[in-house]
Amino acid sequence: MSVYMIGSYDVKDWQAYEEYILAPDPILAKYGGELIVADDQAEVIEGESTGTNVVIRFESAEKAKDFYNDPDYAEVKKIRHRATSNNKVVLVKEFVFPEA
Figure (tube, one colour):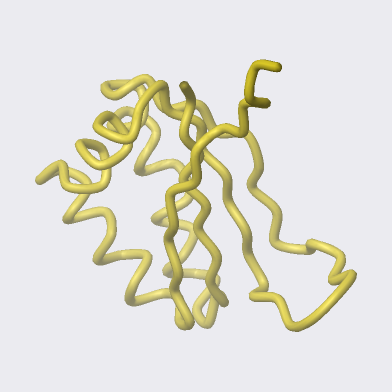
């Protein structure tokens, strides 16, 4: 069952954030991560939203956590943390209807 890593944050330094944008790609590939959504202009339908939202699909929670905890990604994360605020990252499981 797939899991989705959803990240949301506000970019406060676009110049620094540009260093981050492509940096995770080789690490994502290592764990089979597939970038599904990356949007810095999401339309808010209800409530308050952060400025940037990202969704990445992984084949398992283990692979997603391995990506997130990879030592190479730790360095990349520092760039994102410097360039953004209001960071949130969650894992959600793919919804599968129960069999009748």
